[in-house]
Length: 101
Image 1 (tube, rainbow, N blue to C red):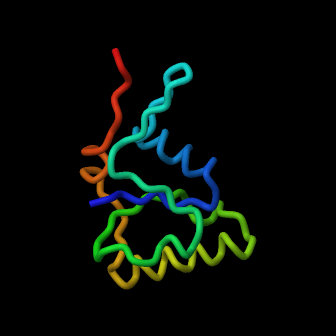
Image 2 (cartoon, rainbow, N blue to C red):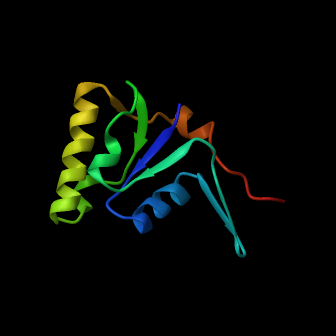
């Protein structure tokens, strides 16, 4: 099942991915974990199967513009309905990217 990174912009999504070990940057190469999708617009939250795991940063620090509020509302609605769920450590661990030795 795909893991969703939900963030108000791609920069924030990249930081979340890096912080969770889902993104490895070595020199000019960038490696992203398999089965990970970045969501930055509310419309992208439509159509995911029940129980799709998501990660996101503290909603208190999201911008207050209309697009971010719509994305936040869609995220919270999806979690409340069970269509989305907060990712467990196991969901994240199975996708971690390891830096090349």
